[in-house]
Image 1 (cartoon, one colour):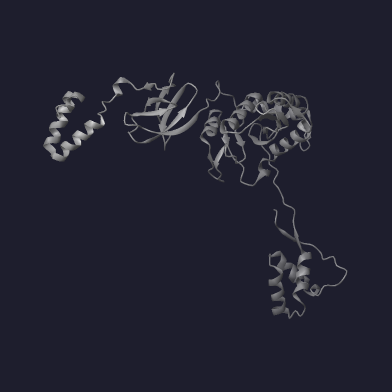
Image 2 (cartoon, one colour):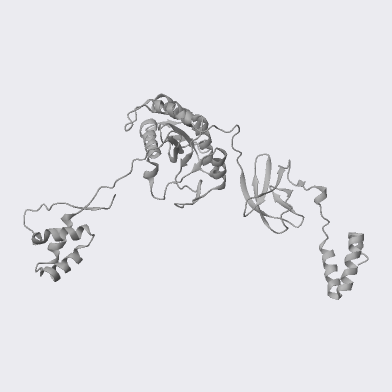
Length: 374
């Protein structure tokens, strides 16, 4: 592997003072010892009388870093896809009217090298997840594993064994039955197939081109994949990409009948009327206790209230039609005494337990009008 030291013969017109001890010095170099340690032991063990610099020069010629070796990764059909971002071609920004480069999303199937490409203006968790769906529907099925980079849009906390995925991204992958296997940090060669696909796209398809819109560039990329990229003979496999994709297609996982439902989420505190406020409307949150923090997922037509720690579903409501609406069943509407009632009951408690019990009982029987008697 990379970093191993090999010994090469010394090429020098003059005979080194260390030549008599060559075999021993070579053995020390293989052990990884530096020139200083070798020089000191030469003096102690062999009575070496020459200067340190002669040992340093001799060791420098012996040391040679072996080329870094890489495993050739082989995968079964539909086993893995690799995904990453690059830069697209210059495209006119509809807001500023100027040309700038969008982000280029590429997914490449490891077995066949068939690719899907899509350009977007800005990245977000949803903008990162949606092209995955589009790619799998373009291929006609999903693979079992996907290897992304450690972008924040997909991976919150990189880890070799248990990486933490963004919840929206993880939910989308679960919907399609795909497992994420993020590449290790600073290890781009793990996803070299998609890296090469991005470079090939930039240097061959997009180099020197300009587009008037993202739709124009996406249409061009789809046409280029069908006409040229998928028809090429891959350099290492010596086979046509489209031919290998036809072998791979039957092994792809079937797609779900419906697409993934995208959501945004945040935390809310359960108020004293047992509701949470979301986008200007109020929704019942019981049995979540008053004052606790809950997770709210906001979909296009409904909201979900979940436990903030376990993500267990607590309540589901249709989205309110307008701001200010309250979705709280009558059976859950609690009588909420005013601050004045609390103040009076607190004064009764200060007088004594019997006074407090009397006032509390009167209030429970007569409700808020009982405040006059209190």
